[in-house]
Amino acid sequence: STSATPVTGNPHAVTGGAFACSFSPDGAFLFAGGNSGACINGFAVNAATGALSALPGSPFDTARSATSYAVDRTGRLFHASYQDQSVHVSTLSGGVPTPVFGAPSGLDSAVHGLLHPAGYYLLADRGNNQIGVYRISGSGSATTLAPISASPIPTGGTSIQVMVLSPDGKFLVAANGGSRNLTVFSIDSTKDQVMRLSVQPANQLGADGRITGLVCVPA
Image (cartoon, rainbow, N blue to C red; front, side, top):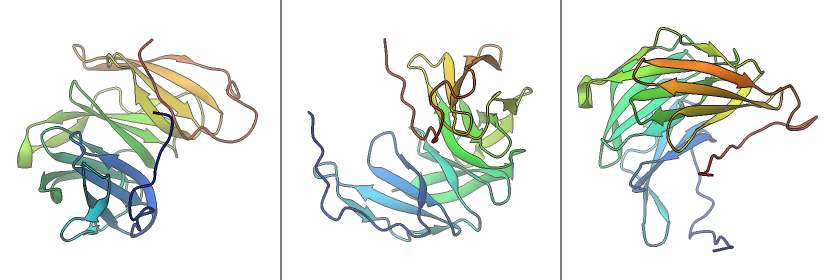
């Protein structure tokens, strides 16, 4: 319980470098990439050993940089591009993605994505210090994304890097990597509303470096 052992084949090569990565909810697949190039790397995960094996056709061409991966339980892969400021959805069959939706994001540099259980895709926009909130509609190949009326929402800090949801889904915490502080947002899905609640003073979490990881656990 207090150690970690690298799996066979670790580290695994990723075409274009791994800026972002995400497991599917069942742990069967892993998607990674986005540092450079225009592709998504897909791997099947051996549940017994943790070893990865490339999916057929991987890496998958996206014609753009692909970051902010998030996978839902119905088998949809959500991602964004900071190269052409867009958001995308693919359906998965055996882990292999098929693009079904793409649209402008209205953001500058999306770097991290989360899925909210009420049906939102959340994006951290590092370039413009804000978050994008997109309502997910439809299912399968008919899936669409549309920003809520308040989106994008400023963080009040600089260079947002990563976000995390509270276990009950009522709050979103964003880490501002440049100003080294946290911003808290409330999420009310009954009103289709996301609001900024509080912002820590700059450098609250240190005078140098960047915040690159964030975890929220039950009290």
